[in-house]
Amino acid sequence: MLETPLFGRFLGENKYLIFAPAQEYLWLVAICAFGGAAVGVWGVVSQSFYWTCVGVAVCMAGIWGAASLHWISFNLRERVYTRRQGPGMFPKTTRGSFKDLEVIFMIAGQHLLVGKITYRLLLQWRAHKEPPMVLTQTYFMLAAGMPINAGAGSLFHFGTKVSQALGIPLVDNAHFLSANPVPFMR
Image 1 (tube, rainbow, N blue to C red):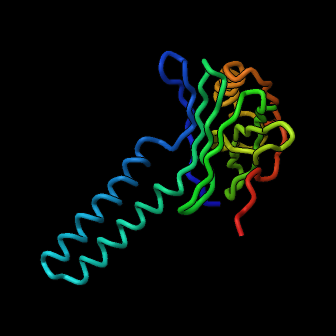
Image 2 (image 1 turned 120 degrees about the vertical axis):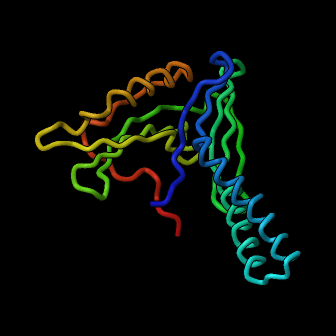
């Protein structure tokens, strides 16, 4: 599954909590958009059809990448969230109260490689108001005989801090394998 991984961080003296792509990924998207535009303009000026096409293609890839980003931010003082979701040029932005949040699940799923486990924090809304969202994930390579949740400690600790900040429970299901929580788009 192609998915831009999100990373959680507290901002502004713990007034905000945001789950967004890594800063390096955002820089890559910006470099593609602006660098592609510059190469496209240079191709037009130098009358090079090849560089014009390459520049336009890279610029469009950067714009598509920027439009496809998903993230969620939590205002811990006002107890509201803002979520941006959905691929493509017309993503959906929703806002709501912490009262709409139900639970954070910590789940484990098997990666394509044998022995590699993916641990995820999955946010679920009350009455399925919104689709579940993978807040963050991490990977761990298990040795033979290790329990499935052997590498879940640091993510569990972070999940505990997040659940306390949001005022919702954290349910640890990392001791057994779960299916991928995000279905493939068709």
